[in-house]
Amino acid sequence: MKQHRYIPMTETDCDEMLSAIGISSVDELFADIPEQVRFKGELAIKKAKSESALTKELAQLAAKNADSRTYASFLGAGVYDHYRPIIVDHVISRSEFYTAYTPYQPEISQGELQAIFEFQTMICELTGMDLANSSMYDGGTALAEAGTLVAGHTRRKKLFVSEAVHPEARDVVRSYATGQSIEVVIIPQKDGVTDIARLEEMIDEETAGVLVQYPNFFGQIEDIQKIGEIAHDKGSLFVVSSNPLALGVLTPPGKLGADITVGDAQPFGIPEQFGGPHCGYFAVTKKLMRKVPGRLVGETTDDEGRRGYVLTLQAREQHIRRDKATSNICSNQALNALAASVAMTALGKEGAKEIAYQNIAKTHYAKGAFEKAGFEVKFGGAHFNEIVVNCKKSVKEMNAQLFTKGIIGGYDLGLTYPELANHVLIAVTEQRTKEEIDALVQEMEALHA
Image 1 (cartoon, rainbow, N blue to C red):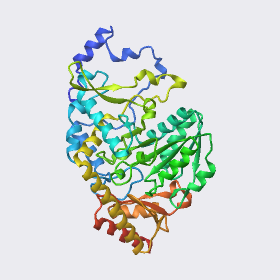
Image 2: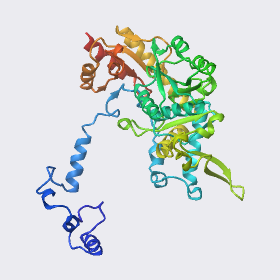
Image 3: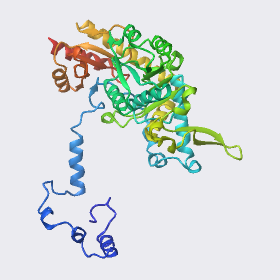
């Protein structure tokens, strides 16, 4: 066993443990299991390799992965290839953060608590909300938690969710709603945005909340002020799921009537990492602060007047009240929240604005390039990050061919919107160059011919 340097147990250790429990071999541990049901022979698995051989094999397997460092990626749909300041990995790799757990003892957790407090503060500045929690698991669960919160607060059992909200986020909302016996009603999309006229027809006094995305799944900018007014006219709460990077240039939801703003902080300093883990955020108006799921960090002073940080307002036990609980979440994504905080700090207000503007400018350039090449770009409204392009052929086949050219294609909208079969959602971030965009259009044009 000595060749396994990460398994700190020697043969002597093993013998001492066996002796302590009064047996002479490992086989004696299984003596009570009938002989006839015990497995005999060798398991059908690979033979164990030495550390160096295993390291080599794993490196070869990892090299087969395609990633946005070596391929030009136009795949977004909720997870994006954005610039990550190099300082992010340096900070989150420090042991005091990397190994930190629940900061219930503030006297030994001031660094962790301060980092979380700063995350909350920056999320509030971006969203225009009064307060934010210390993060959620991801954007989808944050939206679902918002749905259960508004149902509990209003004591109503119906949620209206826009069809232009991320399909996977809608699925998570439905999962949460099932357990709470909440009805989920889908507001259809029209021309890539929430059909406001249909919302006005459908909404009633039994509606707990209206949930929309801004920018939405298609990259379009919703008229959230109007939607919020419709919700509030019926006594409902208004929930906005928002890309925090887009809020570098868009009017914050808090200034347009949102009661709750949620989203995923992945665009700030968090890698794509095969879809997770990421970091949801959850921000509310002051009237809802005692119903926020998860934990909140507050700033205070000690007996000597020195500034300090503590968990505040809610205790873990508050979430174990069965039918009266607003949520069973009492954890957070501290390490990823720290990564987002470091990225936001490194970029600053002007840096966040600059990256957001680059996303807009490059997306508009891509739209013009596709149209010039003869492609139909659906939905003509204002958009951010993403556009919908009609390929007039199988997106799956097209993406497979693009992949051979070193290009990761966009999201196949036919997977979740049957009416948009052969349409692809193209994401263009600040990471994409003019040459890469031109190459994508040229390759798709050649495949389209």
